[in-house]
Image (tube, rainbow over all chains, first blue to last red; front, top):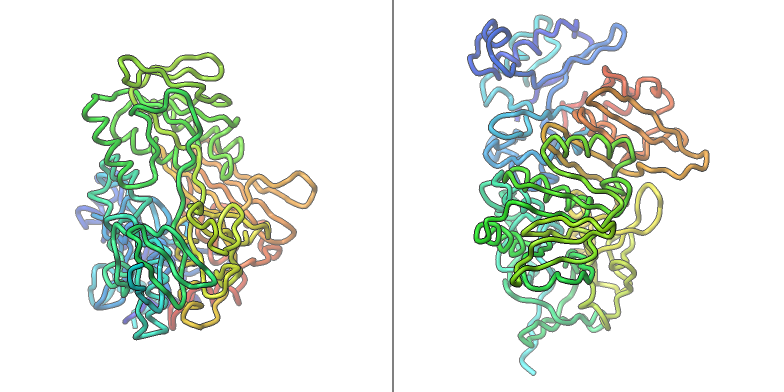
Length: 144
Length: 426
């Protein structure tokens, strides 16, 4: 399977990945509407971490031995059979937060839909290139 | 006596630790017979029950591959009456005997039900199994129940409240201790939880308990508390605790204490017989003491270790870490490890407290050994990872609980190897 690879030496901390991730996961998919009109506002499934002059963008690593999958008590968090992506089935998730407690990277968030569910990077639903990678101006994220 | 049946591997009980044990067994042994026997009539996810009761889940089906692709042959409605560990056989309730090569005791827990006058005659429930949930849901419908008493402010009591809040019932939660979630919360954390419950209309009564239930025309109508207070309610849930289901193991040859004693390979005192999940008494990875840690992630880990060792591999369990999460209204609450350390100078706590956020870390020397997060739980998993892997935090101690704390705060040689898989390191 393809992975989003993090190149911290190229990250400039611009947070364009966060903005594009938010827009991609908003209702309208339009940047101004996503920020000005949607309530609650969508949130990014990626987090830029910074310390001094070092920075990198971090999203679900789709771990090989994913603790969120086996610690999910509904089976909502699962590994896609075809492309090995770790995905959360929103219909089955009940929001027990065992995945949040199990994620070593802390990249799963609570999202309020009709009920609260776990939300994380879905690799933009199987596109050729996730938006965080596509919009990174300095190839600090690559999809390979 | 009827004929003796034979299996290579026998799993007694078929819930989460058995599911994972069966898969681990099959990874190592492609042909051995794996037989699971359970007194229940279907497979389901036990912690989902409260969500089903609260109409927050479509059902209690567990959708994971460990069930849909489980290699075990399962005998339903099939209770085990007796185990002979050294003799390596069990006797089923219908009198049949099954001889085994290796066995896993995974019979879970049973609710503690103290003798309370007036409890007999309907309306008083425990809530750990699917039939409890179905009977309770039917009772609520048939009796138009609006007022409910939940006795016990532990994890099951809180999960019950979560469900009943979703059903818009009037709830009174009664707890004997001076705080809720006595083992996973401190006084401050409990106050946040009490506030969240109050906001959802739940009345919390601490340092009190039910002395007797009262009935009118045989129907449950109220309870009288130790303080003398009377509370009207048509239904009561007794959720004061769960203990390992070991009474059937009398005479089995297995050493038991509170639960079935196991070593780091999940093997009991009787070679070839293993135990895992809520029935097993394991080593607590923080305190080093033996305890029963009845939570899903530990049942998974123990089941996997048991399965591998049953198949002849050598796999070691890292010790149990108590860990849980509840959510009341908008407030999410998680805790892990040791959260109420003894006041002996060995432990240090770091605290972040804001209006809707409370975070506490407990440190022993240079390791984190426990945490409570209320309100802001997103990065809890990072800290749990540091606890599990016993990572020294001295080099980044001042960053702990800071809003910008993250993977970037961790030592390079640790963060580069913290997730498994090629090309995905952070």
